Length: 81
Image: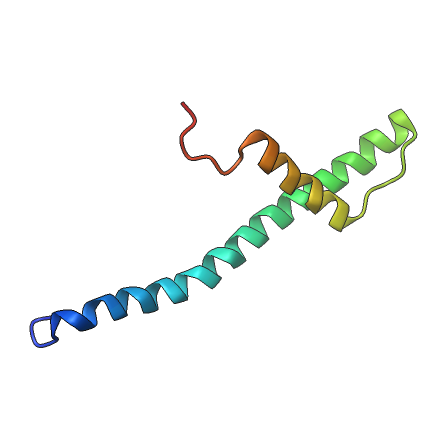
């Protein structure tokens, strides 16, 4: 497929693929962790509010807590050895 194209244009195709994949990966990241935030919010508002008499959390607070837990506990670490 690349026989007629000079070698210098191949990195351009890889860069364009990267530019396409980057926003797609960001959207997937946002959707996955938004779903986690929704689940966290529902569980928090169901259990913690009644048991400990704390106030309910909003979606943004739940999303922030999910991201903080990723940072603290290394949720994005691929090497779990």
